[in-house]
Amino acid sequence: MGLVFVCLYVACEIIANVTAGRPVSILGIVVPSAVFIYTLTFTLVDVIHEIYGKEGSRKVILGAFFANILLAIYAYLVIHLPAPAFFLDAKSYETVLGATPRIVFASLTAYLVSSMIDVEIYHLWKKHIQKAKWSRVLVSNSVSTLIDSCVFITIAFAGVMPILPLIIGQYIVKMIITVFSLPLIYTTGFRVSIARYAKSRQWAIGDRKSGTSGKGSKG
Image (cartoon, rainbow, N blue to C red; front, side, top):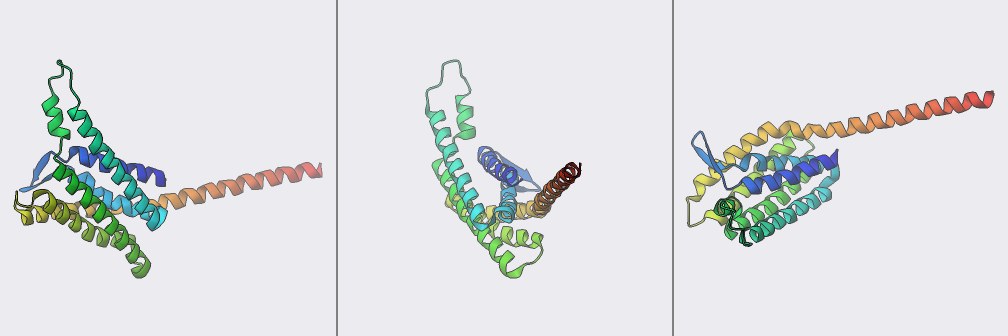
C-alpha cells in the first residue's frame, strides 16, 4: 500500500510541473493550473510519513526532486533537438514544456525547501503534540504551503509581477485544497487492516494444517 502512495506522490509532482504553464482564474484568483494537484503532494507526503516515517518520507521527496530535474533536463533536450520539416507544432511544444530557467529553479527550490519543512513539522507535531491525524496535516500544510508560495513566487516573479497578491491568492487556494484532502491521511488505516487480515488468514491456514496433521497422526 505504501508503494501506491509513493507512486501517486511522484506522479503528482511530475504532472504539476508539466501543467504549471497554464494559468486558471477561479473567483477572480489567478493561479497556475498545477496548484490543485501539487497541493495534494503535501498531504500525500504526510501519508507516506505515517507509513515509512520521517527518513522514509525524506527519501521519497529527494527521489521526486531528482525526477523533476530529469524531466527539466530531458524537456530542454527535446525542445532543442532539430525537428523534421513535417512537424509544424514545435513552437507549441516549446510553449508547453519550455519553462524558463528562472521558473524551473524557483519551482525546484520551493518544492525541496517546503516539502522538507513539511516533514519536520509533521514529525514534531506527531511526536510531541500527538493530536488527531487531521491536525498534523493541517498544521504542517499551513506552514509548508505558505513557504512554498513565498519562495516560488519571490524567485520566479520578483521585479516582474506584484508578489504579495500572488502569494495570498495561491495560499488561499492551497489551504482550501488541503482541507478537502484531509481524509487521505486516514487511508493509512487500510494498511493496518490489510496486515491484520493477512495475519488472520495465516493463522487460519496454520490451524487447518495443524488440525489435518493431527488427524493424520491419530489414523
